[in-house]
Image (tube, rainbow, N blue to C red; front, side):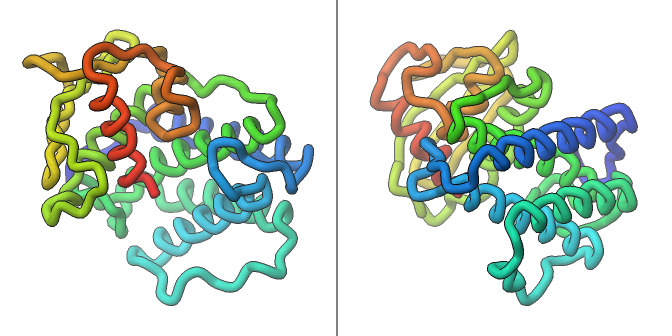
Length: 252
C-alpha cells in the first residue's frame, strides 16, 4: 500500500475478523495453561506470549491515539493478571482500529504506508503468529486462514525483509544469492547480499535456491515456527538455511 491509498472496506473487515478470531483463540488456548513452554520460541512460556501480545496491542492503541510513538514505553504491567490484561488489550485494539478507520495518518515502520490501514494488517498477522505459539505449546494447532497467510508472506518478504534495513551490513548472514519462494501460484524472488535485500513479486531470472509449500506452512516456516523440513526446497541447501536466518533477523 502506498501513501494516501485507501484500504477497501471489505479488506479492512477481513483483517478485523481475523484479528478477532485469532486473538480469541489465543485467549482460549492460553487458559489451558500459562506455564507451558513454547517450542518454537526458546525460553518463552504461554504467559510470555500472552503478555507480549497484550503489550503489542496496547502499544498500537497508543500509536493510533497519538499518531506517533508513545514515550516512554512500555508501562509497568508486571502486576497485572496476564489473562485479564490480554482480554482488555485485545478489546481495546479492535476498538481503536474501528475508531481510527483506515485513512488516519499515524506512525508506522513502513516506508510505503503512513495510515492506520497498516495496523489493520499488522495486528491481524501478529495475532495469527502468536496464536500458533500458544497452540504449539499445547499441541492443538489449527490452520491459519489461507488468504491471511499469503498476505503475511508478502508482508514478511516485501516489507520486513525487503525494507531499507541492511545498508550498513548489519547482518550475521551476509548471503550473496537469489532465492525464490513459490506458494499456491504466487512467487517472490529475493536477491540478497550483505547490504541489501531486493524482493520482486514474480518468477523472473535464475535462482540459487527455491522454497515451495502451502500458504499456512510457508508462512509459519518463514516466521521460524516450523522446522526447516516443513517446506520443500530445491537448489543450494546452505542458501535456504542462510535465507531463513536472514528473515529471522528482521522479525526479532
